Image 1: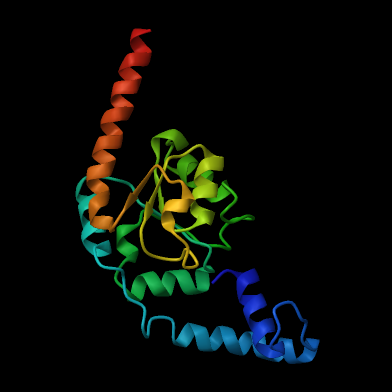
Image 2 (image 1 turned 180 degrees about the vertical axis):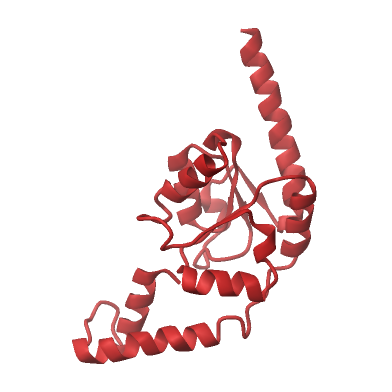
Length: 192
């Protein structure tokens, strides 16, 4: 969870209202307790979606550099990835508090691209929410959305991604197609 969202959630739980402010002393006691409890239960019911592990394995075998960009705080991101045996798939992990701004701001994506010396237009963001598509568009990167995940129950088709896939196992085929199109466009540009 990102810090602002977590703070709002705790305030709503304490007041029973969407935008109310609890007594400061109550909030100061409740917020650290919530964080500790959340951290203890982080992976109790968390599991990768079907196809995620197979997709990550296929991407790594194909030589792709993978970056996890999340708005979840690092204190929760790293233990979650580690406990689900996903951390080793990623060459870089950017949490919600790794940089001064988080998605939908493009900064995390631009930072990842700079880290690997990759132009945003030759990178692909894979996401599941409007924060992801907005960040990708602002960074100048293509975006592929998975049909499941954190889209607040909304239709993923409304996100206007470049493509939508049912599971991460489909991603390597889309990336091969994208790479072929990029090579064709570069070849055409050289001929003009």
